[in-house]
Length: 324
Ligand code: CP
Image 1 (cartoon, rainbow, N blue to C red):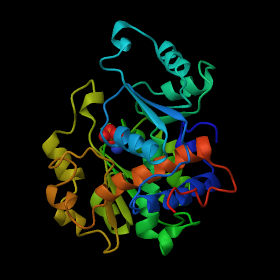
Image 2: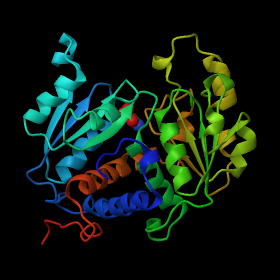
Image 3: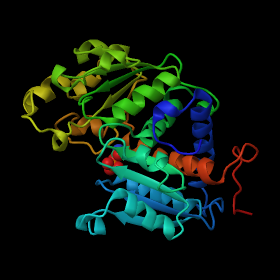
């Protein structure tokens, strides 16, 4: 693995290796000193052209826990506002000695362009591009599902074969949905997408998943239900159905959650819009894993960076610790 651009690029073995390594990394968070020396002397740049809370901060936390030097670049306030291109921005950063670039960009394909253009030599990690891909989100979601739905020992070495995952909401604009469909299929899960017909992408029939429009009928057959935010900021046309109608038909409230099997979990990549796709009662319930997903994000991003920059076959399972 030289770059991480798309969840679709991962083989089953590569995905499981990342998830297993993330389990090792998760143990670091339980230690008094939450650091490994693995990336000491390496510099990682977080290049964010789009807003983010979870992804940006968890990449930074992951890099610091691996002892890397961190450069945070936000397009707002940079020379991008004067017209500087992605190529010149990236080459400027590499000239300062950057060893890896984490990039979030509003344009689908920007990380792929950066990784394949020859502009820079550093490995590129996609932290979300337009409506295309968000591979580390799919990995942290799979990590959470494996812990909750597979076990024992957090499902180490195992995939998600036979688990039924339902993804609900604005599929049209969701890089999270695309990445999850790709990765969950690779890991053997059965995915059903539920959305209003206006928020389903053209060509979805070719995706490795089912499409449904009646959420109430799908819930009793779901092991995990992932709610998505309606991305109003990516919509040019008037939003249809209305917010009220959307919540009534596709929102998850306690009454609807009661249709799920007892073991089933509720997931959300965040940010949530409480009262729209999910009620506060559901978001705050024991069945909702949104906070676990955020914690998983640090471990999974540590694993990805470690494997891209510092890991090898022999030491992956036991990253060296500074603890004596
Ligand atoms: N899930 C996610 O990508 O959240 P942020 O936009 O806050 O990074």
